[in-house]
Length: 117
Image (tube, rainbow, N blue to C red; front, side, top):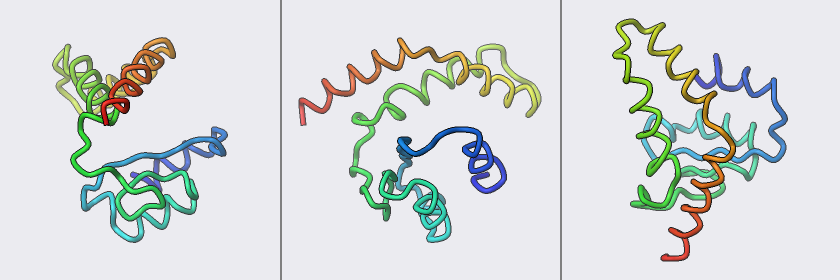
């Protein structure tokens, strides 16, 4: 997935200021995966075994966990996709429809969460 889709897609964008964050799941932290992501993002990688360590037990601290996955899942499955192509189309559509204003609110919420730490 990373080499066949993600990295080629990044070539269409300026990633010099982009940070990449992933959780500490074993499949995400294999040496080959971490090395590939370090080559792509340098010190802008937040991951277990990455330059910036993933905070332990942090599901309420990361926008991916407290917002994105639930939001996307609720919309992706709203029309009960019956094929893999339909599911993939829904995922792409839902992600593409996320507006900057919504992300600004998510980040405001995130900074409030960080204040509690």
